[in-house]
Image 1 (cartoon, rainbow, N blue to C red):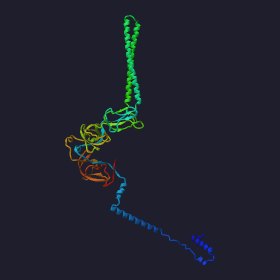
Image 2 (spheres, helix red, strand yellow; image 1 turned 90 degrees about the vertical axis):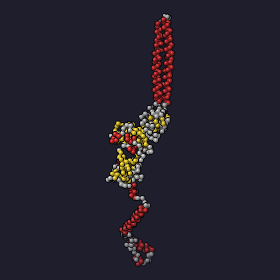
Image 3 (cartoon, one colour; image 1 turned 60 degrees about the vertical axis):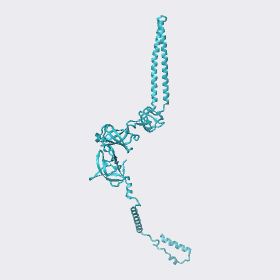
Image 4 (cartoon, rainbow, N blue to C red; image 1 turned 180 degrees about the horizontal axis):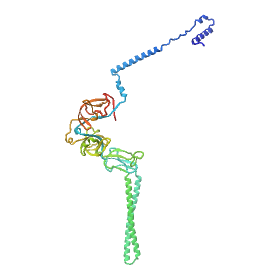
Length: 445
C-alpha cells in the first residue's frame, strides 16, 4: 500500500492522464514531492529555554518593582501583612490605676460588685394570668404597693357568694334572738300560772323545753355564722393572692412578665409559667460584695472605714464601712467574702456594677488626703531583667511594647510606679513568654 507521498503522486498522475491524454510522459516523470519536505519543526528544548528566559525576565521585573514600591512607601509592609494572618498570641491584661487621697495609702485592696441589701424577685402566691401591671423599670414603689393584678373574676363571684351566706347566718341569728325572747316570756307566764295552779305541770315543762331549744339553736346559729365568716376570710385571702404587692420600699430594676402572661409560683419559664412579675431593690442601701485574700483578711475588721471606687463613676470616691465579714472561706480561690456598706450612695449607683474597695488603716483614716496622684501597677505585670524592672504594655494597635519602670512602695498585690508609666496603660499580666517588641497580640476576654 503506498504511503502518503506516493499516494499523492499517484493521484496527481492519474488526474493529469485523464485531463490531458496527450501530455508528455517526461513532464509527468519530473513531478515529484520531496520525502523530507514540509515546514521544518522547531526544537522542543529550544522552545523550553526561550520560555524559561522569558519567565526569569518577568520575575526580575516584578521583584524590582516590588522593592521600588516598598522603598517609596507605595506598598504596605509585607511583614505586617503576613503577621496579620498568622495566629495571634492571646494575653491577659490589667489597667494601670491612678489613685489619689487616702485610697493611695490603703494596705488592702479588693474588687467586687455592688449589691442591694434588700433585693427580691416578686411573684404571685397563686397561679393566674396577668390582668394589670402598674410599674415599669425604674419605678419607685412603697411597701405594700400593688405591682400587678391577676385575673380573678371567678374568685370575686365566690367571695360574693360566701359573703351572702354569712349575711344569711347573721339574720337567722337575729331571728333566733327574737325567738328566745318569745319563749322566755311564755315560760314566765307559765310559771305564774303554775304557781296559781291554773295550768298543769306538764304544760309548764313544755314551755321550758321550748325556751331551752331556742337557746340551743342560737348556739348552733352562732357556730354557723363563725364558719361563714371564716369562709369569707378565706375567699378574701384567695382574692388578695391575685394582687402582687411590694414587700418593701425600693426601685423596680427588672420587669420579668408582661400583660397576659401566666404566673405560677416557682415557675421557671414559658413551659411552666413565669415565676415573678418584677424585681425590686432597695437602692438607698447598697453594699459591695468583695473577696479578700486570706493572707490579708487579718487587716480587715468589722466597722473599718473604706473608700469605694466604681468603674461607672470614675470621678467619685464613695465612703464605706465594713458591715460584715462572712465567716466562711473559699477553698478554691483562697479568699474570704466581705460586705462593705456604702454610706453616701447616690442615683448613679446600681446593683452588679464592678467596683474596687480600698480598706483604710487606722493611721490612714486620720491623715489628710494626698493631693498628688499616685500610679499603681499589678505585681503580676512587673518583670525583672538584671537590675531593671519593666512591663509589657499593649498599644492602641494591639502590639507589645516594653517599658522600663522605676518602682516604689509595694502594697498587697500592687506596686507604686515612680516613673515609666502615666496611668491608664494596659499591661500584660500573663505568664512570661517569648515576647518581642512590636509583636501583634490579642487580649483575653
